[in-house]
Length: 314
Image (cartoon, rainbow, N blue to C red):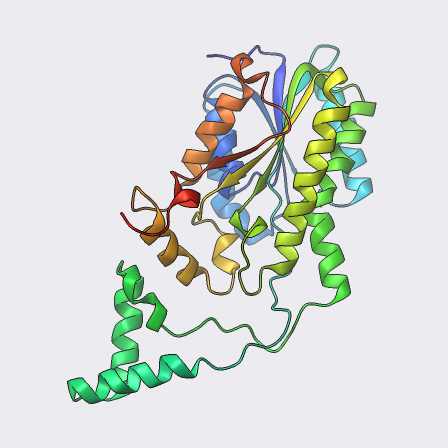
């Protein structure tokens, strides 16, 4: 499928991860791309070639290195793209892929004494010191033996814990800010007659990961908003859905404390024995943008290879 030349995707957080993979996929099918991102000058050495690869597909690409979470920046972007689009251009997809939140535990975790006891027992049985066992376990776990990760060194969460401001900021940044964009784009008359709003969530919406509480709260808030938007925006031709991706290696996920353990568990659980890739999710987002997906509305759609249904045995 090739999209009409007057239709665009607006991607919030499109310089890496899911956002960038989606921009590349949709550009390959003729959709004009608008990317709003916030990156420092040093990061642009990596990002600029990625943007050039999108332009090489022949579609128009407009980028804004600005704070998508600030009202004045949002207004400036919308005014600029309205001028760029002219009379005909409209947004087929709004993808919210912003990853900017606080990753702190609720309280300071206690030491895992069971792990230390087991390491010392293994060391005694094998006739080596516990430090050698610990180092070997960590090395092998990182090299692709997830079965050993339960014995690896636990994540370092630092001394900070989540506070009210952290929670409120993260909920807006990674959750409810999608509504600010939707309302302003709707007021500007920029949505196509058949358009999609997609947000991203994770399994953290149902299970607890230490240090993930604020992000989990943001994603659950986004899910609730998406259902309301699915109801109230349908008369405007807007379909609103959430994609729940499996554990994926992205620049954002690499910042999550304990991510190595989460990846190890995902590899063990996933029926395909691997992590979700950004391209897996981008491919599905493309499908969601097609005419045939017009009747999907108000849903949470899992794109994880079956990770969520697996008890761990393959």
